[in-house]
Amino acid sequence: RAHTISPAMIVPTTTFRQILNQPLIGALIGSSLPIPYIEQLGMIGYDYIWVDSEHGTITPTEAQCIFTAAERRGMATLTRVPLQDSANVQRFLDCGTQAILFPQINCKSDAELAVQI
Image (cartoon, rainbow, N blue to C red; front, side):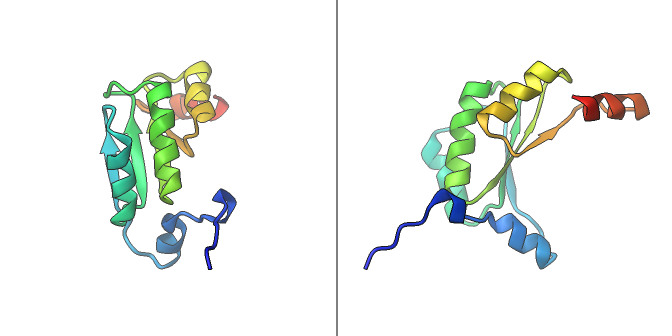
């Protein structure tokens, strides 16, 4: 008998590993990769995909494909954005990243700006 699993039922393994205080395994991606490669990372046990748009060449559109493939395999997604501006951050959030990493936080005012974005 076949069972279908809705996306709402998929819980990233990250949650379970955090509860068990186990190390997380992830991949840093700075350029576009074939989607089957992303999915294979999830199949072999990776917990998250970190898209580096600050130093890499990944656009929000390319990132959306990566996020979809990662989430399909139960991996969390996070993105380091190139600039601290709300439009740029919103583009990656709209494409499906689950977390944003802000670059160049060197002082309290930088951190406050990131929180306001």
